[in-house]
Image (cartoon, rainbow, N blue to C red; front, top):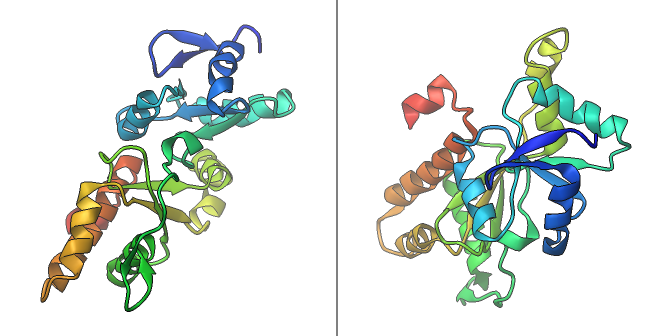
Length: 224
């Protein structure tokens, strides 16, 4: 393990000891954030870089088998998590108070946004989570549980393929209420007779987040 080096999203190569040393002051000392597709996950990498974080690049087929093996062999000294499996605390802005935007219903901005997506999203079974990111560039991000996604990735071929096919997908759509697009969506939702446009935007925001995962089905692409 001392001689394994990884390509870094910030350029060059790094050992995991060097990586942990750089990340320990940023609240990510225990985790190794990795990227499996630099093109599809470019928005995630951009956010990490903006806040002084980095990921190791693990974009070959063998990496999805090597990473769990490596964790097991090292006693989980290194806990890998894909860049889109959850949001680092350093990307969240929890400094501001929750603002009531609908006094009659006593709804906060986050509650209003969550209801908009639950009411208008065509794709069912997607969990909605509203956060305030430190960047307003990304309206929404799709995150997938690390262990469930690993199992599906590793089982796309071979004897476990049939089992993986039957695993239910569990995705969480994280809505960024700092995004201008989301703020405009909320304003549009309280404008008379604009419900169809609200529904269209909700589904477009979801689809754009899904596109970053690179897992669009043919039917989803056609609808988009």
